[in-house]
Length: 341
Image 1: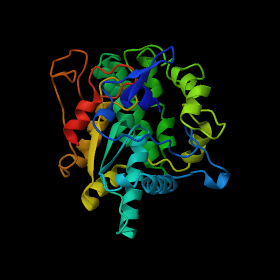
Image 2 (image 1 turned 60 degrees about the horizontal axis):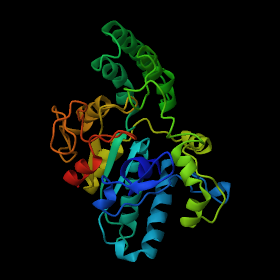
Image 3 (image 1 turned 45 degrees about the vertical axis):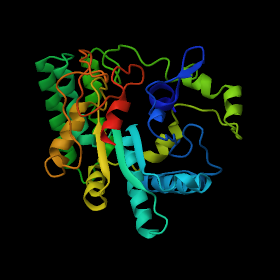
Image 4 (image 1 turned 120 degrees about the horizontal axis):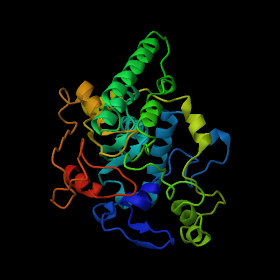
């Protein structure tokens, strides 16, 4: 819903909760459907604990069930090509959803879901490659000096050796190395989603944020026909806890399988400013696994900056392709999506 309100939806909501048309909306180019998934995030809810989701398989199965029910209502859409998009931790969700769809199609050849491709913007895909990218990203932008980068790289390598000696390796163990926290502290505690800022996105998250006030407004809830009393919230700690037991270190093998075995188009795109899921990490994933052996995985490195209007813009470089930024849309993502899909 944040993506709908701040990035690519049909309208933008301002501080006064007034909606205005979004000229960069993907809805100007395609039919766009926003889905609260896994269950209990956003407006979605479960009737009992048995309906909750605890792993990627259940998440994918829920999405397939939703798609089938949705296409029963809107049957004129069932043959249209489907592209599944997500950002940030949806870098884990989107490949898992795609895998569930192709597995469903193998069992239901007369009722196939017409999945054509997936795209992940500034996505969390591989914990090793992306954690290792933090010192390089910070150093390349002048946020830390060379001795600091060397010191943090040494901490990471030492932690890596210890983890490799462990019989069980999890994303939580990688996080416990504390590399992101070390780099952010050394950088002066910049915003991990926008390295230009030294404060959080105060108007994006929290009960007083624009999204929370708008989506919980009684008139809005009535207008979209909500029948339950659950309030919309940007985060759900219960879902985070339930899904943490199934937290893949990497979904790169799933992405490669989608390419190799199922001929699903894949687009990974990243922007300049996101610290946590930066473009160095995404590029490293491609260099390590996909680029040379899988040319169908689109790969772009644009040295010149541009702003989506065919003009150079010194405020932006595209690391892979596109840009994710909740508040500054100098380079419309619509341009990248329309070029590649």
